[in-house]
Length: 251
Picture 1 (cartoon, rainbow, N blue to C red):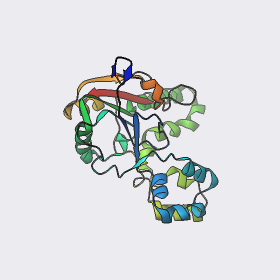
Picture 2 (spheres, helix red, strand yellow):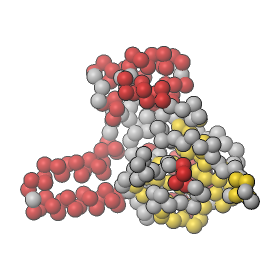
Picture 3 (tube, rainbow, N blue to C red):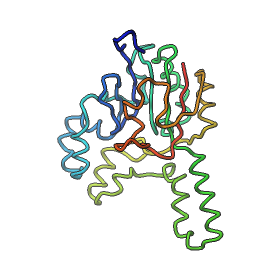
């Protein structure tokens, strides 16, 4: 990626970025979240102070202008072979399975030959292992039963969620307005449509024509300078989304 002492341009497309953006010029942040749709719509933006609380208004106003607002159900707004890498975290699991082939094709289209596709999703294997471990604990410690539903919720709550989590915390009038204006959890991309692990996700990439599929760690990648971008790190340098599986493949 470098030539002599001069750094060549690197373009990473960060799909479904939400609040996890990167200001590095190498990175193009793309999303279509609730906040972005409000910020890009003059009418909704002017009304936002009436139906968003202080914390959410601060989050709205803190969004950088560098985010590309795009309906991610449609064709990606980039040219063929224009990106060195495509990255998305906890986005694939929100897509209906019947649109996955088209999305994978779009990622392949915008990647350069040899480009990297890095995917981060909830790790179903880890969630199930934690559930089974707690199930065994309940057999010997009856007191553990009081929290057992929490382990079930970690697996299925995102699948059955009808109302967006943030909206559910609001007062009745605000909840009503947000649901009417912004839609339910599924419309806002908060509900899981499928889950993945270290077996079916690599298979999905191979079926889509990607090669050299590999399981990675949150701070290990074939993308040069990956840790400098901070996309999989929290503010302390640790893992941003524990309980994830990290998979990379090459076009």
